Image (tube, rainbow, N blue to C red; front, side, top):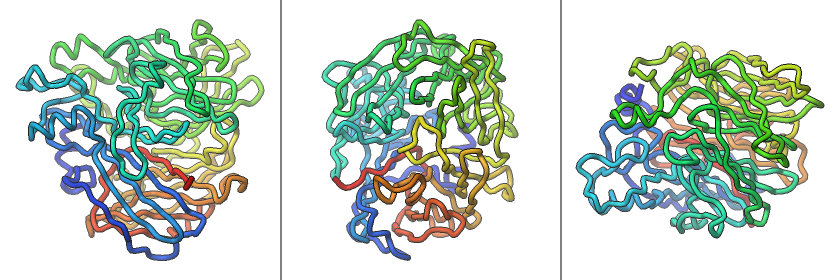
Length: 467
């Protein structure tokens, strides 16, 4: 699968760009809403050098910042200058391969820190943090995008830190976890919380059923859920020079449910049909039940079986799915119900409803009329029951990033605001920032901010309003 990704990079938007840039005055088509004052930060892999056998997931992080103010737009991009990036920059070549492993000819005195800080970027407790799930958060200086160093909250946390922490919209508390918490490819998970002021209030570790790549997790008002799904980690494979992560469906699917104010020793493990989920849209409680909306794959993409054979490409697509957990103690099984058959990924909600029942959600979708369901090329808007409220598709060949919701005002009704997404224009080989009315995506963008170059397909981002 990785070879396919690499070979297709020239005709898709996966290949890195080899430069950093500042564009203080960008051309705009349409009119930017005057209420949009702040910065959209995006993060994604943009390897400085090609490395043999390196997975797309482990490219050096590059930040892209679109600053909108009083109807104007500017842009800046910078690599996150991690110790790995700096060492390779100084050497003028790749020194690391996949998942933080040094290449055989890397000098012994080179740093062992393979952090790439390439997956997400959030603002919490007065800090802007670039995240990758294998390392501590990397603090970034707003505006300049300079790296300030790792953030361990004065030594209160250690080890891996998820790229998908959840911020409670009521208390401002940030809830997080980390996998490989006892070392690379181990089944231990960490769990913790940081209050709204940036003080760590909880940090502990516990054992999962097996070592798994746990990209995202689920948080409601009163519960935390940990998905242990069978992209498995194996030190034995890694020591043999094989893929450290592989698809092993026979391991089964486990979801650990814990009360947020409870103890990890009291986690209840639920089971269901084998699947994989990279991203959660939202979750909430209904009496004795927990409902979680996710983008579910039948088989994980981008990873092979342990013997190197590929997974089934017909099953390598995510669909909008609802998980239901019965907490009454009558069963240890949870149900999985697909709500739509469209291929999609990168789900988002109005973050003011995170962990609570919500009536609006959005995700990037693929065009079902294109061969093999193509790259993500549109946006779907759904209600709280999963019904489509709107569906927009880009011109053939163009692709779209994760759609990020920005409310019109703090007290605006749920869903009243805009969606911001970066669009790649295939024919022109450059990118636009597209702004949609969040409740009328079908009408298309109300404004486009035009870049002279492309922003490679990346992972996640967030809006930080003017302060």
